[in-house]
Image (cartoon, rainbow, N blue to C red):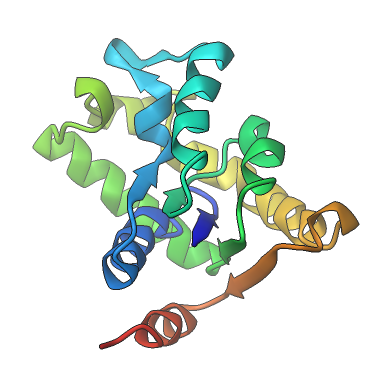
Length: 174
C-alpha cells in the first residue's frame, strides 16, 4: 500500500495521514520532515530526492505532502492519491489557528525549526499569505493532473468536506 496525501497547507494532510497510517498499520512519512534542515534551510534537490527515494522504495507508506518537484517521481510508485480539497474558508481558518498556536507555543517542527507569530503576520513567508495566494491555483492544478493519462494506473480519491474525510477514515474501523 503506497498512498500520497495531497492538498494545500491547512487542509489537514498531516492529521489525516497519521490517522490513516495508524488504521492501516503503515509507516507515516511527512515530506516536510525530509525537506527541512535546521534554521529553515532547504535541502538541495539531491539531498531531498535521496531521502524521498529511500522512503518510496519500500512497499508500504502513507506519505503526506505535495512538493511539485517530487510529484512525477512519487506518483510512479504511488497506488493511491488522496486529495484533501476542503473549502477555502475552512483551510484559511485552520492555517490561521495553526500558525498562531505554533507561534505562541514555540512548537518544534522539523529539524528543530519553530514558527513565530511575526513570521505569520508580517512577512511574505507567512503560511497564511501562502494559502491565500496559492489555494485556488493548487485546487485547479490537482484537478487537472488527476485526469492525465500518465497517471491512469493510480486511484484518485478527492475528499471535499470534513464529513467526507470522516466517512473515508471510518471505512477502516476495526
